[in-house]
Amino acid sequence: MRSAAARAMAVRALSPRFGSAPGAGLLDFRSGARLRELQRLIAELGAHEQREHDDQRALELHTAKDFIFSVLGMVQKLDQKLPVANEYLLLSGGVREGVVDMDLDELSVYARGTDYDVDFTLLVPALKLHDRNQPVTLDMRHSPPGHSWLSLRLFDEETNVSLSHEGTVGRWKDCCTDTEPDVSGVNNYFFSPTLVSDWFHEAVGSVLRELGRKPQRGTPRVEKLEHSGTVTSIVLAAGGSRVLYDVVPVVSFKGWPAVAQGWLMENHFWDGKITEEEVISGFYLLPTCSPVGCKEKEWRLSFARSEVQLKKCISGGLMQAFQACKALISKLLLSRPKAVSPYHLRSLMLWACDRLPHTYLAQEDHSAHFLLGLLDDLQHCLVNKACPNYFIPQRNMLEHLSDSAAVLHARRLSSVRSDPAEHLRSAIQCSSVSTAHLPQATPTTPSDSASDPTSDSAHDHRLAQKLQQLVTENPGKSISVFINPDDVTRPHFRIDDKFF
Image 1 (cartoon, rainbow, N blue to C red):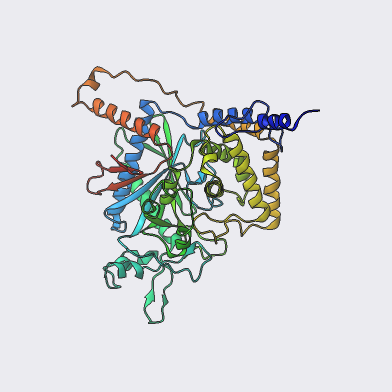
Image 2 (image 1 turned 30 degrees about the vertical axis):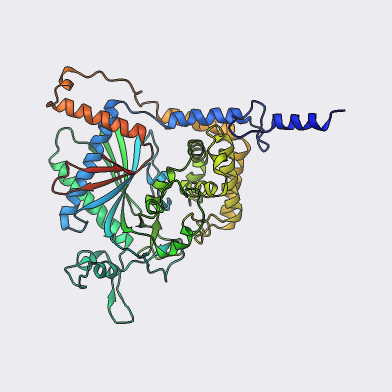
């Protein structure tokens, strides 16, 4: 008969230990999959998704980016609506990838490999309310949590401009809904997300049509310009690259909204790793409304800038699991209405970071555990129709789901959870097909002209090298950009806290 000590040693031998990779014999209780095999598949999928760009493709992406910024500079000159000195937020991944909290039902379906090769989301402030030293209070009387109406009086009061045609109201009056007098009898001009996005799409289209009349050699070709919901999607062909830009007009604020002040009082996983000032540097209003809101007046609060900062504190293993989980649930997103979006998964990842010990999440070789945990968390949210927003927990992002829709999607997710290995293999195959036509990164040998610092090819080569380095070192990070519309050839970049 085995002694108690021998039995204890056997249990310890079969149990996972911090800092150790999943053993060859460890299984997932639900599916029976070997954790080591799941770990291998996640790594393989990550290798397909995280593509390296050679010098030529890096230069093509740089050319497409400069073209988009030039277009926005020309849009500002059309009727002087956009701020003269603007700051954009460029995020790796399109709106459909869940990089911002927007509803996907109104967006057209785009497939990587078929419609585009690389995708970005670009937040363009139509209005900026900066230089405030107190919490920002918005008009949320008519909206559920996390949403707000926006009176333009707030902007003219901030700049001490009378409510006349000389101020913000004068520039944007045609993009406001019917006015409502307040208790003092003064009219409120409510900024309309639908009218603003309609104006923005028309302005971008006007600039692109004008550029099309006088095409210049070397500029990208516009393959598609589409207005889906409140998002303007532009596909540019630059050399052999098709680049998708989902451009979203937003309202930009410095500071922190009063509705999210309670969140700051809690303990978080990023405490001591980054400063509170970095996290609460600003927020946006996105042109999307709640399921029960007035789409002509209601905006949604977005903390995209803060999410960029928080991402610095998330371990590589958890991020790898998040990307794999996003690929696994992609089939759930094909149904309409879309009950589950990648942004829901992003919120669950942030909640997990608050809930679980850092020593556990910091283990790079435990992405299989993290993947299964994210799937379990998502299924729990569907069954209970509850997915609280990370920054405003009182906002339930699944509250609008019907019981039948929640059960249907929970069943679909259950099929993924019951055989994660097979679904990972399928995701790898799809990723291989979508990237099959992309050239592999190869070292480039500079030509003789590249050694001449005054030559155009030398300049292009240096730009390609610089951009390739930025793409490699800063995957998924944001780029804030200052552009002078009178000289759009010299943008100033900030990648997180680095300046270029």
